[in-house]
Amino acid sequence: MIKTKRVIMRVLIVFISLVFLAEGITKLSAIQLHVDNFARWGYPWWMMYFVGTLELIGSILIHVKKLTRYVVLGFTVLMVIAVRIHLVNNEGLSAASIAIILLIAQTGILYLWWSLKKSETSSLTAGIDASIEKKNTPL
Image (cartoon, rainbow, N blue to C red; front, side, top):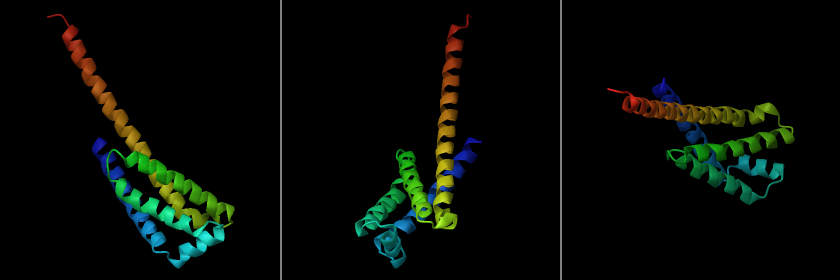
């Protein structure tokens, strides 16, 4: 079960990484869609480059094991903001659908990470408890 969880988590990480890599590149390339969207939402032009840079850097750093959960938390904040922007601007759920799908995938990664850490901690403490009991049993 632990191996399955790790595989699922890895697949979700690769999926999220590819999506944010593509989104970051298109924002940094100033694709007209993004330029128009940021202008319509009332954000300055540099905000598109800032978000694109965060997405691009995050898409790489998400593969660093010690940073994965922090990157996922950062992406979660970005996607909550994205959903809010779409809804506040009356663009509906269809416009926010990619952000919602990413939020679900990110929640899955965080849950799997927590579950795996819990399993590792449980097996570690079980091994310590067993060795303590073995030492305390009279011969």
